[in-house]
Image (cartoon, rainbow, N blue to C red; front, side):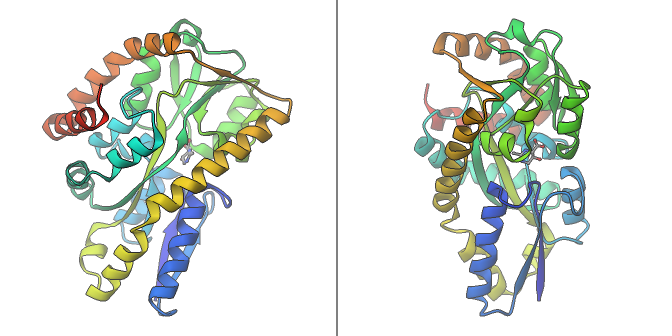
Length: 309
Ligand code: 6CS
């Protein structure tokens, strides 16, 4: 039996590490009866196309990140809201593991024909551009690349930017050709996609983390043999601790490489600067409420209750 698993990132990425570990675990649990074939990004489509392959049943498993999956699941937009989840990694992991939150999110994923199997934090988003982005004014007129979800565009628009959505694979060329001026991704992704070759300043706001969902086709999961479903569940349990260590390591090491490359500088925002971005982002929170309805509101409140003030 072959299970196909599609990634939104290239080999050597955080998603690849998750998928390779899942593959190993499934092959051990099933004693080789099940082979997991991992398709790195680029081979079979853009992020929204991968999700479509899962709902069509052509691919069994995939990564689906909120930056595009909020198109179909507005509740997923909660992960795009700045300064909402805890700043501390351990506290953040606890929020993501909360049963009540998972159930609310699961209902949204199910409505879209997907089974939510895990939530994977991939590190803090870092903005890149050819200037520092220290205040919302610095975003004024900046053509900022986003994924497809309108909710991601709303955040950057609230800060004065001019969002442009592009597939991940087109970002490097668009930056080089000046079709867009900036983009946002964790350090590991900036390094592996070589964005530092075409951008000169990284600004680290500690505003949002990149959190991806691992999904399967809902009906495929429901109709799995009991034993196979148990293998899936056993393989994914314990993954949060495994991947958190990996993502921290990848982000730390690649941030170091980016700084040593001499091609890009790093600015950390102060708490005072971050507070200005938070305030300016509040219209995006209202837009999330308007889009994500009653369940979205419960999700937002649950995250706020778990995250503290
Ligand atoms: O920016 C993007 O489109 C991509 N960034 C990451 C870190 N993972 C997948 C996603 O498609």
